[in-house]
Image 1 (cartoon, rainbow, N blue to C red):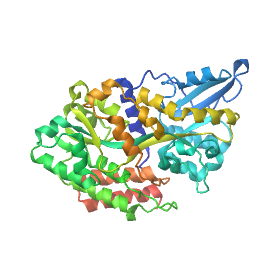
Image 2: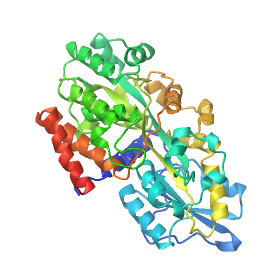
Image 3: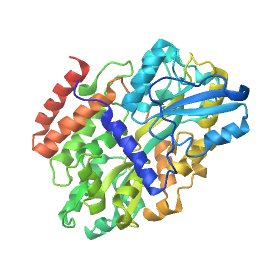
Image 4: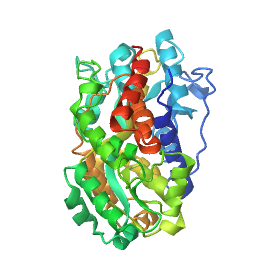
Length: 441
């Protein structure tokens, strides 16, 4: 199989790295997991119970001081975090340990792109946390992603990735366009096609060497994330080529790819990073976690030039959960810790440290981005914009091969049109062949 989920996972790692560089994250000292298995999960020294937490990337719990705070509140508990940097290494390892019935951590993180697989094939390996918490604390669509058909909640939501549009107001002004974030949002509200129409207007008077948007793929992902249909039906049947959500997002992306408004860059490649610093593109579809990435890549030269507006439709890109394996020796204490880590108060603390956007709406009114971040983005009401998006994101069904299908459409299909001059029909056909390979057809 030629495609994988590595693209999405690499971008999340890079976004975390960007936040580190810009000071949204503090130091990144982590307990590394060398793959040897759970060495804690029992009684520590002095009669203490050691709880192990398996995560990937940078979840922010340690960086925000939550482990230390919890251990101070519960002196009989010691917490050890086992971190695997790459999630394409992390998740297969978790699956192996779940199947073996041993070696899993007391708490295991689950990425959104893996949650459907966990729900469909591993639900019996996780504690039903729905019986332990007030589910109304979380966004309904977030809970739905981690809930089995018979109502079992196998994971508690951590962060989400609500969507906005980040734009260079200085470039908009030079192109003779509106620069006010509220008026811009009103112009494209409800329709990504209107956003593309504005891009065509931008290109009529675009400053030399600039394009309206970074890539057609970014517009595709944002448009797809704002609908109710993706690549699977709710019953788990693959339906990507008949999905109205896919068709609509593809049509919008093709409008971008066949025009001159795209910088034709592949997201998270070096030229794309350089595009931020050089002011190559005027807009980018911008989930909450990308704020730190723009800060780092655009640098001092972008300060006060970037702004944030509501996206045409509410959409999500990213997010995770934590679950408690049934094979754990410390289930009672692990459940208690999982509930505490994902409570609104703790999610707000993680946001303050690294801008991971909470999945608990009651925390939204308390969120305060760093002053430097607000100033960089022209004093945009960042938390209000992302909060409004998060609370209206439609529930979407993610299939087991969801990300692999997505990669085929963006990195094969769209790039064929955008970078190689193929027709939209040829791009679709190329993606179709790749997807057949992905699905083993």
